[in-house]
Image (cartoon, rainbow, N blue to C red; front, side, top):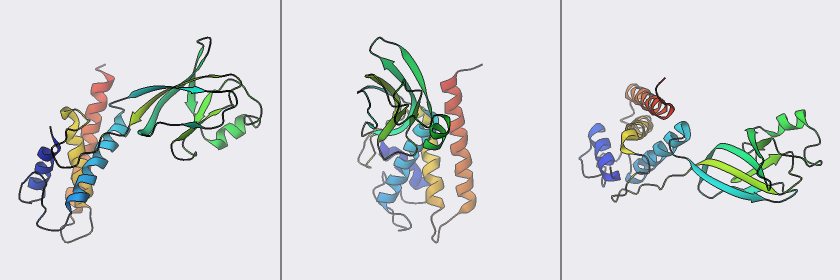
Length: 209
């Protein structure tokens, strides 16, 4: 599906003349904020479900305290530390408080990393703890920011089977906007439909028991 098809669906739902999302005569919403609502819905779906995952090996030197994440990073799925000899150590997520409590010397005494920190770091950076005492590779599995739609016929990154989650996420946000057409009841319904679509995606990804 291209973006104009989904934008037309939104126009029907919001009682706007359907034209591929080019115009919004009610002036309750602008074309730009509708497109951003759709892009936000697609990013949210990927973050929630890990529907599409990108793998990136990152070389890390001895004593490195901050590792740059890729510019299209949206969320970390998992990490592993791989030594030159090929030994692989899965890394758990943590924050500074946790690692400070577990190992107060982690910033000064090098060792094999056992956790990664990205929730309280500078944007687009990740840190390993303890600080690595030998060079190795950070094997990063992450969710990449999807290519944003622009309303000019661009295809979605998310497969068509899951676009209902994007549609209802966008509708929930648009119907919550303070204005003369604000509709909390319909917005709540859209959020429920978005939740169901996310759950369906998680079932498909997880397989049938």
